Length: 428
Ligand code: IMP
Image (cartoon, rainbow, N blue to C red; front, side):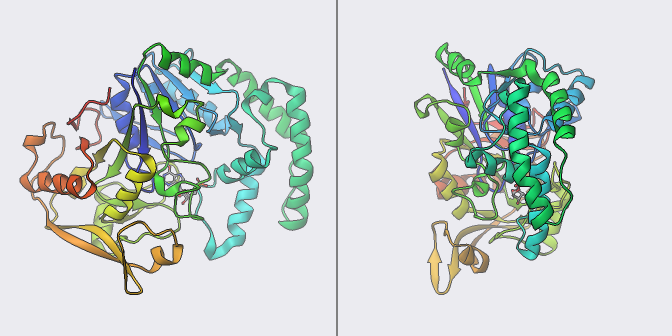
């Protein structure tokens, strides 16, 4: 038996979708443990691009069980349109997709409240994806959330919806000065969703644990990245779930003793989308050229991603809070052709050198990154499948990362396609 957690080590968009897709070949089950349709996992197969938001990328392999865990928040309409979109392209979810009974539902009032909150914050806004993720998790923690299993008992759903709307509509009308929402319309809409999704709703914790106990390989798919974690990220500029590897346990009902490995996905440089501190950000022509070459535009919202140099302070932190057993380095090819590359090894702030990730937003916002400069490589790394075939300086870049982090780079992605990959250590 082997279980591997796939986790983003930076601010998301590290290329987890491709690595999950690649590793799914040897897994029987792929399970998403947190987040919602704020995520956008891009996979390219035979020149065809698929962007998955809620369904684990493993669905692109025939016959694999794909689980949406209790830690995920689900917008039923987004999920249905994803299921329909896959069906149109010949990918059937029936019999393979499983949704946790305990997963929370994103309701129309979550998106409405989020919009009003972001508008009110002005230049202090989080820059969310606007999908209702935060308010849905807020309801979960406040213990008046609606869960997927509630959709299966109309009376329970109706009662919870009506209780929630009493407060929400009071807020919308009196505080936000916005239009109230109508319970009947929401009820009818969500009952249609329930009809469509009921066949997928299951006790997913039992299914996953049985699979693990019977010796099957299971992949746990994280969304977003470590620095967007609600507890360990750059709070308040974070998402509302535990994106770190530990989230796989709470978000699926799997005990920590059942986790064999944790593979951290790191982009060969750094990106961030939305507001918040970003010490190595390049607000110049180099940043722009990385953005264009790396197609650094959000897979969910289309927003341009902020780009910057690789940051060891962040990766060291990620190794610690996730307990990484290895790293998959992605988008190496985007750095092809650059004269020099910079690697951040510390932050300077008020005369102090930070080598460990500082928790204070003020330090992160105002620090000056300390860089080590290394030689770039002129040759193309696109599609290279063997480590020995990489340009000498690309090999040096990877070796340097390993030395600085004291952690193995076990997979290197050299392009968008499934087979554009170098595997130095098998995960299963
Ligand atoms: P939310 O998850 O929509 O609440 O957004 C909170 C923050 O997380 C914002 O900065 C978003 O841009 C960021 N975020 C959410 N999902 C992703 C993702 O999949 N990739 C990168 N950033 C994300």
